[in-house]
Length: 322
Ligand code: AVJ
Image 1 (cartoon, rainbow, N blue to C red):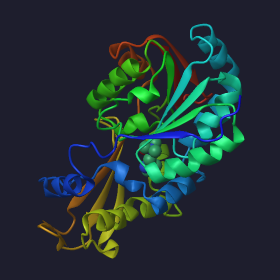
Image 2 (cartoon, rainbow, N blue to C red; image 1 turned 60 degrees about the horizontal axis):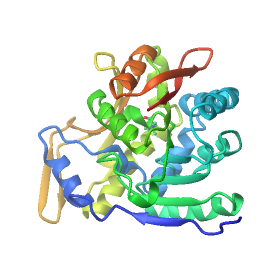
Image 3 (cartoon, rainbow, N blue to C red; image 1 turned 180 degrees about the horizontal axis):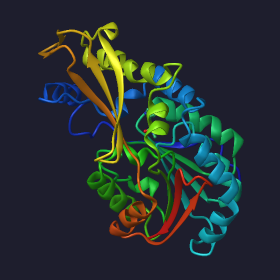
Image 4 (cartoon, protein in one colour; image 1 turned 90 degrees about the vertical axis):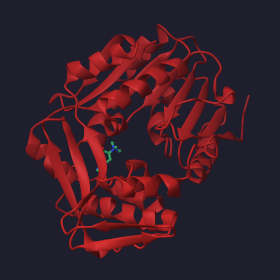
């Protein structure tokens, strides 16, 4: 059988508040904050792709090496527990390349790609469907960071929930737990394959989030361009600098944008003043101890947790069952 067109479901318009309201609320907090999902407009996605090629940014290539080395072992463990034809649910699928790289080994019967960027997902999935005409594909436009509730069209029997890239690091431990509980429900008795970045020496982390070429700085600052577009605000990128800071107490790398001078930012219906040196918190990237991430998975109800890692123990790929 050959399927030539993916189907699409949108769950974005049902969001409680639109992006402008969410951004304004974040900017008006005493400690201003903007959620990291707003990094990924088309330039931001291109800048993130550039980050993954930097010498300093180890997570993407370390995870890819683990998948390459362990995909047969992962497939074997999976096929021992999941029925043939299981659904692969890809959270934050983007162009779907990571999942597609595992199709041959994992042999899913159906591919459900979930992403907050619906236009991007449409293009990517339509192209991917041409490469894999026999694999039924569904695109779901969903902000799963707010709540991972898959539409009925995307659910049919046990699923492997795939969440690579260590994006789980953007969540606080409490929110990560909540997402992992929802992922378990979404798997319908299936499994989870997830990448988590692990704790490592501070200089390695600092360099990964403040690279010599300044690509991460551009990625962080580009957020302001996207906010200007979404909120119709008047941020001047030249007034801000990129700050990356390792917070050892909380086990995370933080990114902030820091005002170079006292200034005000305006948008229709709102204004926020910043002192010189005052910041906007734009991202947390949690780094886990291997055992504490396993504990988190267990707390969320996942069982039979297996960990696959690299020689340096810098990154963990975890397979677990509902
Ligand atoms: C895509 C969330 C995994 O936290 O490392 C890269 C994003 N931020 N450089 C990360 C990011 C700065 C990235 N994640």
